[in-house]
Length: 112
Length: 122
Image (cartoon, rainbow over all chains, first blue to last red; front, side):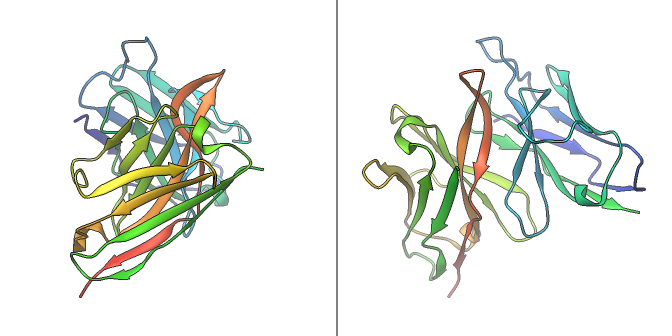
């Protein structure tokens, strides 16, 4: 199974400041079809997960452009350029390159 | 508008069975890739099961042989039959739809239901 490791566990951020979350996979996420099936999700308290980014760096419809994804192979990053109060929640990376699908452990973003 | 509404959760004794439903609207379940994901109290997200539009199914090792994913095309509904339930199956269960970007499956899930709570306890 592919293990997804996220850091940090928690990220206290000042409003308006940037935040960065790292996600590392135990093996390359490049699929035999050439795609890398790495996505990022946000889960606000009491809400279901919400898709932010798919295939490393593509923002899902309606996601603010302060969210961006980057990376390749085994190392990926989600960045929030200027954190807003509504960004509080837990962020997960997920790989779908091979079954079983696996999630990172989550990173809690909170306001300092 | 795409909507997913789960139901069927509740309190069940260890060893018991439950069937979760996920009623979909705004799209056709049989033409989509669908999945079940759960979140146990105090833990992160855990993938449970997946069904391709063609009908192939996949399961996490932790539920293989006990859970079965299926769909009813006439009702546009996804199901998760859960047998031999254990305390560690206690979680909120979400159904989610596979996302298509540029006409192909992107490996992500774009719409999620609100979830249904399953509590396995004596």
